[in-house]
Amino acid sequence: MIFLITGAAGFIGMSLSKRLLEEGNKIIGLDNLNDYYDVQLKKDRLEILKENENFTFYQLDLADRQAVEDCFAKENVDVVINLAAQAGVRYSLKNPHAYVDSNLVGFVNILEGCRHHKIKHLIYASSSSVYGANTKMPFSTNDGVNHPVSLYAATKKSNELMAHAYSHLYDIPTTGLRFFTVYGPMGRPDMAYFSFTKKILAGEPIKIFNNGEMMRDFTYIDDIVDGIVRLLDHPPKANPEFDRENPIPSASYAPYKIYNIGNNQPIKLMDFIETLEKHIGIEAKKEFLPMQAGDVKATYADIDDLQQTTGFKPTTTIDDGLKQFVDWYMEYYHKN
Ligand SMILES: NC(=O)c1ccc[n+]([C@@H]2O[C@H](COP(=O)([O-])OP(=O)(O)OC[C@H]3O[C@@H](n4cnc5c(N)ncnc54)[C@H](O)[C@@H]3O)[C@@H](O)[C@H]2O)c1
Image (cartoon, rainbow, N blue to C red; front, side, top):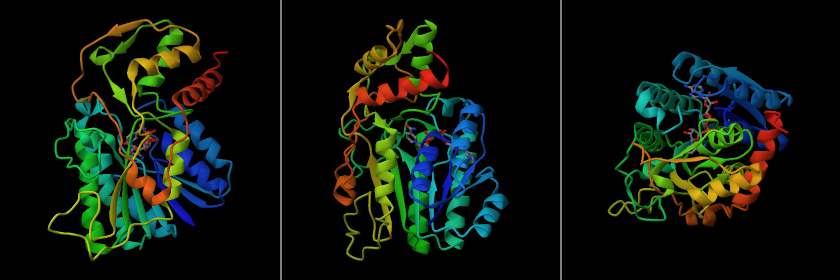
C-alpha cells in the first residue's frame, strides 16, 4: 500500500509512519517543518524515517494548492492520513490565521487531492477539543459538538463537516479521529507534560491552571498508532439504511465516520504531575493559577464504537508511558 501521511515530521505522523514502514508499506511523507516548536526535533524525527528506503519526503505547505496537487499527481497514493495541522488550543488565541491556513485551506487541498485521485480512504485528525463546552461525560461521538471554545476546535469541527460533504458528493470514505491528549517519547514540546519536565529539571516553577482541578484522558502514542493501524482495515461504507429522520452525528448514509480515540481512563492532573515527578526524581515547584481562556476542565473519551469496530484497547498505563517519556527526554537532551 502507498500512504500519504501529512505532518510526517510531527509527533503522531512520525510514529505512525515508522510503524507502517516497518510493516513494509511505502510512505509519502509531507510536512512544512514550520517553527511552531523546535524544528530540530522535527528534523530528528525525519532522520529516523529517512533510514527506510520506502520513505519519500516532500517539504511543502498544505495551503500551497499547486504543490499539493503536484504531489498527488506524482505519487500513486492509495490511502491519505492527514495529521498536518496547526495544533494547540492556546496558540489559536494568538495566531488565528495560522489555523485557517493549515486547517481549513490546507484541508480543502487534501480533500481535492482525494477527490481527483480516487483515494480509497481518508483518515484525518480531529480533536477532543471539539467537545468544547460539553460537560456530559464521557464524551460521546453521538452527542452534538456545536459549542467550541477555541478557534482550533472550530477548525477541527469544520474538518468533520467538510469531510462529510466530500463523502457525500464524491463517495470518498472518510474517517475523522478525535484524539485525546497524546503523549510519549519524541512528543510535542508545546504540551504541558513536556514543558513541565523541562521546568522541573531546571528548578523552575510549573504553572498549574484551574488550581490543578483538571482531568485528562492522556493517551500513549503507541496506543494511538495501534488504533489508527486497526482502522486501516475498516474504511466506512455507505449505509442506505441510515436513519435520516434521527441522524446520529458520528455516521451517515455516505461513507463517513467519526471516532473518539483515547484512553477511556481520565486521570487527575495532580496525579499525572506526581507520576512525572517520581520518574524525574525531583519534586516540582508549583504555581497555581486560574483557568485559561479556551481551555476545558476535563476530557474523557467514550471509545465503545472504536472498540466494537476494531478491537482497540489502550494498554499503556500512565506510569509506564511517563517512564518511557522521561527516559527518552533524559537521553535526547543528555540529562543523565
Ligand atoms: N497530540 C495531541 O495530543 C493531539 C490531540 C488532538 C488532536 N491532535 C491533532 O493530531 C494531529 C497531529 O498532532 P501532533 O501532536 O503530531 O502535532 P505536531 O505539531 O507534532 O504535528 C503536526 C505536523 O504538521 C506540520 N504542519 C503544520 N501545518 C502544516 C502545513 N500547513 N503544511 C504542512 N505541514 C504542516 C508541522 O510542521 C508538524 O510537523 C494534528 O492535526 C493535531 O491537531 C493532536
